[in-house]
Image (tube, rainbow, N blue to C red; front, side, top):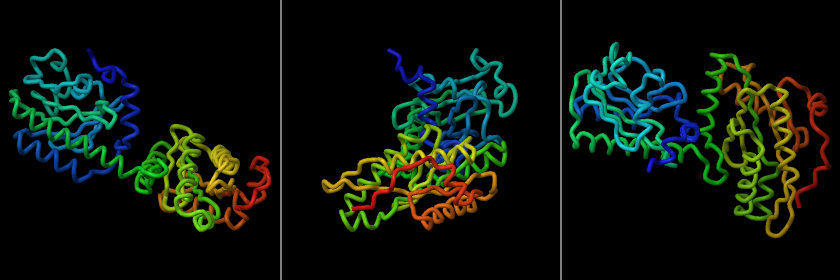
Length: 344
């Protein structure tokens, strides 16, 4: 029976997206693996290939001078569609590849072995590949070695995902969030698409910890994380920057829409019934909003959103301030709210 996961490319792409690996910088564990594959198997080309919707992108590669190719001509597209390693001893004798431009032109792939790289939830997101410019037979020992290395790649991807996720709130870690912001700034520089950032933190959080204890504070953080992920769009990135400080990256979002999103989340937190030590406690948060169009530097964009957050704190908390709008304009843009109840 065919594994349904092999047939569901949309779910596979979602799994790849959750791993947040595409377009990331070179990383030592993956670089070491492709070097080892080349040395141990005596092949001129080795890649860690991840198959996106329309391309294959190489997280690590040796023996090639490009970092991506169209998916339509990739050997790895065939590899991810099966459970067993894909082995091609002579591409000129294989109907699937005999007219492939990667075979007929550079890098002139004549033989290929690819073992699937899997996401933590079991989807084939790519493969670890060994390629030669000559026909060759990959022995069972060769495939066993390649499979062991592919398992290491899968484990590294899982560890990388764990390291980029905050265990308490489910948000991206600071590192993971900053990587997303860096990619968004680069995307804006290339395509000039709108994008906005929200910076927020929980008001009087120290008082919560002092009054109810740190476990209660953790519970508040956990609930705020849940509220954020329920309120935000699937395409938005939610990160915990440290302590009670959070940030949201909103791709394809104008300043006006980002302000509305911040207000929506602020009201969700304000209106949520937090119960700590059997007491109903009012929890609020302060928000700052900034748009990428004003900055070419990641640090400046963060600083602008933080500055707006500090202004919200100075204006009495439980409000949103946006770069480019004065306090009166922000107040007019904000929806009507109920009186903020004091922390008991």
